[in-house]
Structure formats: C-alpha cells, structure tokens
Image (cartoon, rainbow, N blue to C red):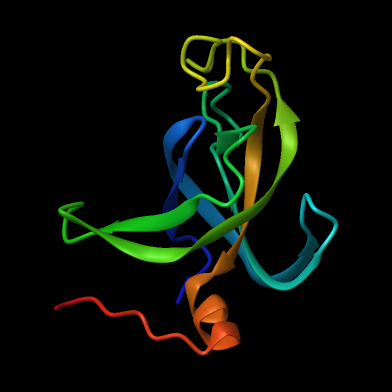
Length: 134
C-alpha cells in the first residue's frame, strides 16, 4: 500500500523509465485521459525544483508503476498509469525526438505529475490474484 512520501517509477513504452516520483496523495479521484472517472488513484510528482525531472511523456498511458525494493534488486507492482498532469517543456530533460519511440512522427510532450490506479484496486475490481511464484 502506498504512503505519502514513498517513491515510485513509471516505465512507459514510449518514454522509458522515469523514477524518483514522490507520492503526494493517495486515494484521490481523477478523470483519466479517456474521460473515465477513476475514484481511487494515487498521485506522484517528479521533483518540481529540477527542471529536467519528469514523470513521463505522451504515449506512456497504461504503463506499469512500480517501486524498487530490496536495494532496487527487485520491483514491486504499485499500479497502472491512468493519466498525466502538469505539462512541462521537454527542453533540457533528456527527452527528445530521438528518445521517444514515435518521435519521428511528433514532438514529445513531457509531464511532471502522474496519476495511477493502485494495483490493489485493480485486483479487487477484477477479482484477480497476483501470483508471485511458480
């Protein structure tokens, strides 16, 4: 279960891994990019004082959110990205046309905030069990 102050990472298909995203709110409601209301989401933010720190880029929606555990020798599932917020310039972030999967087709949009549906919520809604060993 996430707590304010914890850190998570986002691993987007389009933009790759973005880590050190600090959880600032848990169990808040948000409308996703597709217009769907998500009553339970967690909110994490890249370092607002570091202009090169971003939470992700366009095309990363639906990506896994995870936390590094055991001195980052393993990953812990935390949820699924539902929407971004706070568009920021990609200038000086390391994100460019060359680092975005579809960058030859469009410019990258960078975001500072991410909202994700916690894994516990998805498992409960779907009546699923997460198997972690064989």
